[in-house]
Image (cartoon, rainbow, N blue to C red):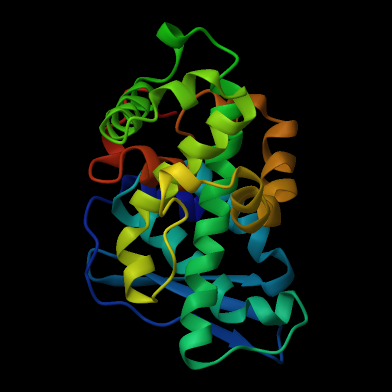
Length: 243
């Protein structure tokens, strides 16, 4: 892993061609391919260690370049072969596509929720700059719909869930539309915080919390590709607070 990460970090070019992830039932290994210049480099790992590999690469991916491609290929492999890890029957067709998007949405929601919860402990002026901008966008919508008073009077936990729903819904708008998934925050006035939490945050929350429990610094900035997509989707590798 370290040697591959070093090679990918130093490379500046990625060929668009991609090769689908493969899984060998004989060796129980998943293999993904990333191109460095025109040279295909294969990364192979036991399927039982795929989640840990995703976590590790996620710490280094900055939204673009070969490392980001590796991260995306590993995520794609997890979506494609996750039923083997989870010991469930594989879904097909439309249900398979929706399952893949739901996987991303839930991880993004869990990371966003944990990040917001951590940032909310700080004075507003000391919070992440991209969070401040995101909160401003939400406030503009609240003012437009005359719901600012409800926001100001709400509990911290409700505010965090509302903002998380707002951000994740916007960041994954294209994917949701493609697979006909409902907007997590379809109507502000009727937002149900508990329903959003159970549907989007809770499924991956324990896994995400286990990541930063031993490394609290992961919540000091936009530490992974999920957070960068949510807070700064169009220029995620330019984050002033990225590690």
